[in-house]
Length: 411
Image (cartoon, rainbow, N blue to C red):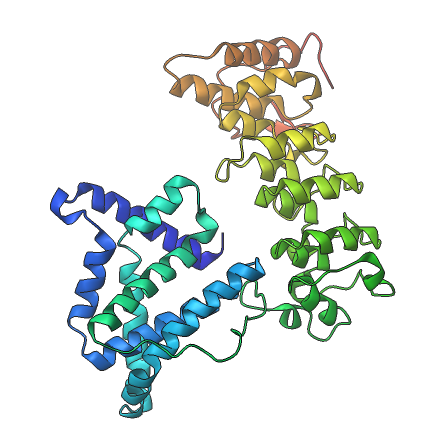
């Protein structure tokens, strides 16, 4: 999730807690009450400046919608709000000095920040119904404030904006604030990048003779760009044209890691079908470890797909092995089911067993089985209280002094 959306989501969750603790009479719609309080003391000119700003933000966010039809609809709504508030806002701007305009802008931004703490019933319904997710929350918030601005302008008897004579100008798709020309400026990939995220058809033949190994800003690849705007046809065309499915892209992460992080099963399957390595390693995690992260659950389907393709729980680099993540999250059943793969540090896993035993009121059978196997096969002494003072062997595994040697087990 982008940083600004994360901050807003944190504010929204905090607002839900505050709203739940408030008297029932104040819970009708916390966002409506907050909006009324925030704009009630504003003069008409300030309200127009505020709503023009909201329209500006809504237009910026419209450009971040991957679907061209949704982008057009959001842009039309945003442009209508901006045009409606523009005459009053421009008159207010003209009466202010540059310093006053800067101060007014800061006050507006502070107001938006305060409004983000008041959960909207409409936003809550969209999230709880599954119609929107965490990635949509910034758009939902700005759209909610924009709708309230339209009501405010109605109350002020500001006439609606005239309907444009021509078609609405749909902004080019932007990701993290940049369009294709911005991400691939100065490279031969800029023209095709613009086409990939415009909704126009892309075929493998359109990509002939292009330097597909070239990268844009921050290492962004064309595969990354197609994934960002959900350009499935372009993604397929890029792979068919010979784009390396394992080549690092943005922030040096292979596309499989990004697909796993997004839990986008279509892109994940497309990459695996083209021979992408299931054990792809990013700068922070492997694709498998990323798919296991419970902060973005998908029912475990991405994890199962990668496992079926051959992704290992016991990644060659011990820092990326998943055994300790499984223990930390209490998935002892998966540890037992895949024990034949275990090549990680048994003392480290033993530490998670000890922690789980200390915290668990009722120990699951799988936990007891893991403990038995660690003792019998790897000579782990329990409880494992920590690693201070322990030496490591040639593999980098901790050595417990005075423990019996394991009778058998993987080496």
